[in-house]
Length: 549
Image (cartoon, rainbow, N blue to C red):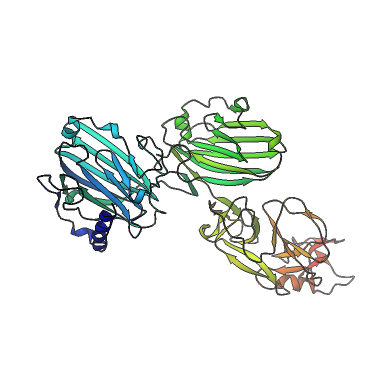
């Protein structure tokens, strides 16, 4: 095997710079008398496939009586040849180099003979007729071979047609992160094929639109737990809301989302079809709204799902509301109590089964003054946030205004930030499935809904408005900072500054505070109405803004 890999590596490296437009009109692969050994005859051209492209090859096959004396395809990711290549054989078998079978699928088309610990795999092996009929089916048969790339997934399909019969095999595998070119090359074993390169095409793959973060497998071939999954942490006495679109293969009623909760070695798995298992599963606790099963598969495909998971002491409540593309919304509810759920963290895992989910991004709304504080429930990727939104960590002050640094990366859940954008605009921020890094030296604190009070040796500020502009105002009495918002805390006392500007010194605020007031000064509110007995707040005095404390 290693000698074969080394030999073919030289062929591949020689073909890296090959211009695909130079393909021969027809290409003989193997010897016409079928005497060539495995990988010893002529090889096909090397076909490079860019990300999210589909290669289609058409050829006529000529084989001997032995079942494995057929054609093979080698799919490879350049420079990773010892880890990232797959051999697929025409008789429904194949292998991965050096025993590295990284295929995460256990799909309908990948089950026969599949062993994750082995480099060999089989796929739809029973689809061909057995014995001599197999030889007849492939002898002088027309073959359409496609290699469809969807992000990191490659769907390999061969359709063999002889007379009125067509046999179809399919295999799905992963290659890296889906961002690098792949190459395909065909070979033969005591057989030969004639490729009609006039019919060879490389076209754009019709990719599903993902608004947020993909969970599962775009090919929808991945059985329970396959592909990308979302792992989150749910604290005690808190609520997590997951909002996603569900896309079903419609293989079965359960070919949709699956929710898994884990606490230590105990767990709950709950399926969308009102069923589950595990230590925390109680069938009587799971209910559905009326009409749930009417045209169930059609309702689930493309359904908008809002799922809330609430822990209140030992009580667990899960409510999943589904809004199908057509028809009324329906719900699935799981209402359960167990003393073991009262404390500690719970792992929340969102999985799929022959389906995929579009985990929608969170939204942050900017105030009418162009600023907002924000702390999200999930790891968030600010490098992919909507255009026009800028996120900052606050690292200090210069005596008149805050000093801040831009955040354009993945940050952990509950990271407090200052956001800037267009007034009253809502911006999307994708949920990240990998851990982020908290901004260094960030002085913002996430709100919890509890009161924040003045504290000796510290100065705390909340986002506010004064003099017609946003600023941070010193907290001088108790106030609650809601969850999802943030406040600023310095480990020092800045008694002389009640306001800190956001983009440099808060000039308008300083001017308002510098006005000379007398007993005869007249006060007007911001609508121009005279105020006889002004209290705390912003007023117009002598044509200037004044803040009374």
